[in-house]
Length: 160
Length: 76
Image 1: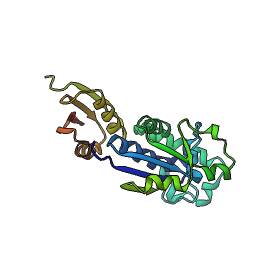
Image 2: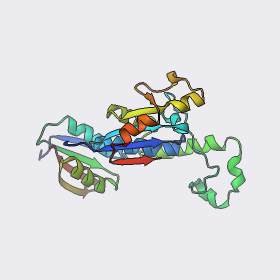
Image 3: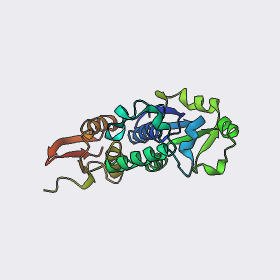
Image 4: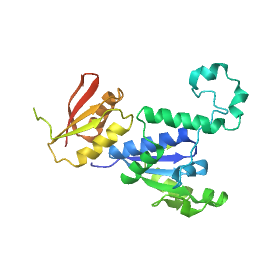
């Protein structure tokens, strides 16, 4: 394609539900011919771990649809019961599979295949004493200036 | 009636997989060849129109057959 469009994304959240927007948009943009970069910062770094352990929490999330109309009658404090998070995560994953929705790992692989550039925030890696070896191959490390080098030239820039 | 060169069955797949699989399949075709896509995701109707507009691969037809969505895309 003549003059390629550019999409820059900042991924800041590290839960199963919020893992989807950056990877769906990046992989689709790449398929449409965009040059794409995702900058992972703070909790967003969980999305680039080799071993994805993403969970979804009903806690403090009144917009989350619950099975059996639980969101109507189940007391909010019940969402804080130990084990609730892994139960909800399991149910969410099951539902996604049944609906033909790709897994986060699958979408991430598709992004990598499509040469979406992934940059990890070096400051966050240092802050949380994260081990660079725990991240996927091909991940670059950089700071705010690295992000702007690409984002400054982008046509679309999203903060997720 | 082989009016296409390759077929992609994206039945049961949800956004954005039909588009991503189609993009991949088109990559294996040469200019002028036609890809037939079968999908069940209702969102794919608008998505394939948008995909075609943005990538320049012509959407020859878009229709519904027995509850499935059928698209014919010509590689540009």
